[in-house]
Image 1 (tube, protein in one colour):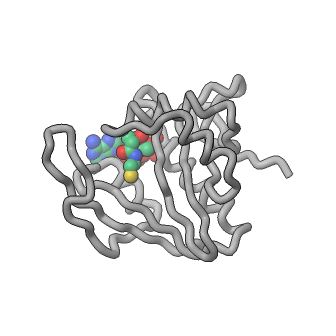
Image 2: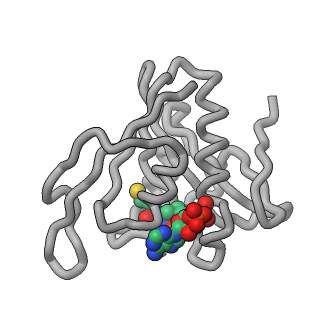
Image 3: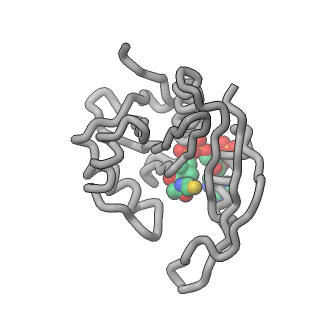
Length: 159
Ligand SMILES: CC(C)(COP(=O)(O)OP(=O)(O)OC[C@H]1O[C@@H](n2cnc3c(N)ncnc32)[C@H](O)[C@@H]1OP(=O)(O)O)[C@@H](O)C(=O)NCCC(=O)NCCS
């Protein structure tokens, strides 16, 4: 079965491929203080328990992606990133909706994520998509200035 979801700005969402690893590492590094090497994305892409959903155009130029891990009846959003050029157009929202829809075909019934409490854009997006804060983890993130940030642990049912 071919998996394909519509996305804003003429883009669509489809499963990531191993060849995407370098581009995913590039986009991820634009969104996070600590980037992950392409080899890490290759490992995720080769593992069916860590699917990646990419938002791209017809020529498969990638604007953003979401990476999840599925374990039994739980799913975790490991990361989501949209190229700064493409932010604010609804791609983050479309990626999450594609993930929710795809997870309906799995045993996962609840989804979790962690987000820095100072990441206003992401918290707004998650709140709008039904995630609620269930706990906090103090000092979870290291910031570029050497200080630490608290993580919010958020969760949402998948049905
Ligand atoms: C979080 C992220 C994936 C969102 O992607 P996106 O394509 O811009 O998402 P959307 O356009 O669907 O929605 C973004 C929402 O954030 C809001 N937003 C953008 N910048 C904001 C800011 N500085 N403060 C508050 N809200 C902000 C937008 O207004 C929009 O909400 P609205 O539609 O209700 O107005 C993107 O900002 C990103 O890649 N950030 C860097 C990586 C990151 O932080 N990932 C999440 C880590 S847990």
